[in-house]
Image (cartoon, rainbow, N blue to C red; front, side, top):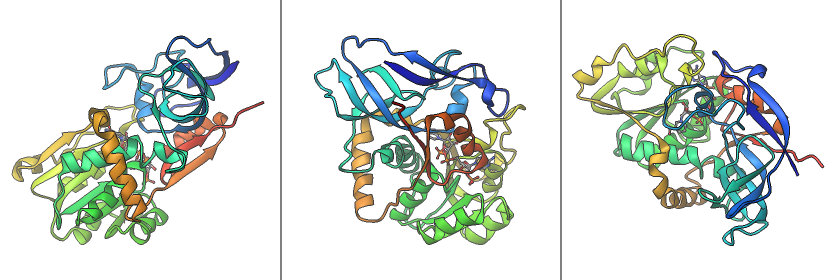
Length: 335
Ligand code: NAP
C-alpha cells in the first residue's frame, strides 16, 4: 500500500515556498512488532513547524532533508501488531504530513470521537490547549482581579488562554489582527477588550484597556508587540514567552525587546515554556477543559481546510493571519 507524503526537500530562507517540498507516493513498509498502520484523518498545522524546518539546536531535532514533514495528527487504526490497539481505534500521534503512516505505538494515544469531534484533539483538547493551560496557570499564575493580556489572541493557543483567564476571574485583553477577530474575542469569547494591532496603535490600546497595568502577558507573537506590552507591566508581572510568530520567517536576527529594563524596575519575570514538559499531566487538564467546554465556559473553534495537497499553502495561512481558530487539514483519501 502507498502513502502520499510531503517530504522536506530543502531548508527555507525566510517564508517557505514550493521548492522546499517534495510531494511523493511511497510504499509503506510491513508492520513490525508493536506497530500500527494509521489512516490519517486530520493533520495539525502549527507555527512550530517553521522552526522544525531549520537546521540547528532547538527543543527537538529538526526534520531531516528527505524526511516526511513532522506533524501531529488524528487518525484511525487500519492494521495493528499491538494488542492494545485494535482496527477502528481512533488515535492521536505524530504521523507526519501524509495520508497513511506506519508508526510504533509508543507515544500514541487513543481518542474518543463520542466525547468530542476528532479535530478538537488537535486544538483545545490537544497540544495548543495544553500549552495555554499550563503556560497560563503554572507560569503566568493569574489571580482573580488581575489583568491578563494575550497576543495572537484569536488563534489556537490565544483563544484558550483568554478564556481560561476569564474563568479564573481576570480582566482579559486580547491583541489580534483585524476587526472580525477582535469582535469575536469580545462578543463570542467574553474577553473584556481586544486591540486590533493591524489597524490601531497597540500602546494606546493598552493604555485604554489596561487602566491598572498588566499583571500577566502571554506572548505568542514577540517583536514590537512584546516591546509595547513591556511598557505597561505592573510590579511582579509575569511574562510568559510561548512563541514569537512575528519572527519565525525573518532573514535577519530575531528582534529582541528593547524595553526589557521594565523587568528590572518592576521586579518582573519573563519565562519561556515548552508544552511537552507537562506531558504527564495532559490527561487531567484535558478532562478539566472538557468539563469547561461542557459547561459552556470554553468555546472551541477549528479552521478546517480540505485536502492533503493544500499543505504548502495552508501552512502559510498561519503566517498571513488567515486562520481563525485551530488550523487543521482534513485529509482526503484517494481510492
Ligand atoms: P495561531 O495563533 O492559531 O496562528 C498563528 C496566528 O499568529 C495567526 O493567525 C496570526 O493572527 C498571528 N500572526 C502571524 N504573523 C504575525 C505577526 N507578524 N505579528 C502578529 N501576529 C501574527 O497559532 P498557535 O498554534 O496558537 O500558536 C501561537 C504561538 O504559540 C506561536 O508562536 C507558536 O509557536 C506558539 N506555541 C508554543 C508552544 C510551546 O510549547 N511553547 C506550543 C504551541 C504553540 P492575527 O490574524 O491575529 O495576526
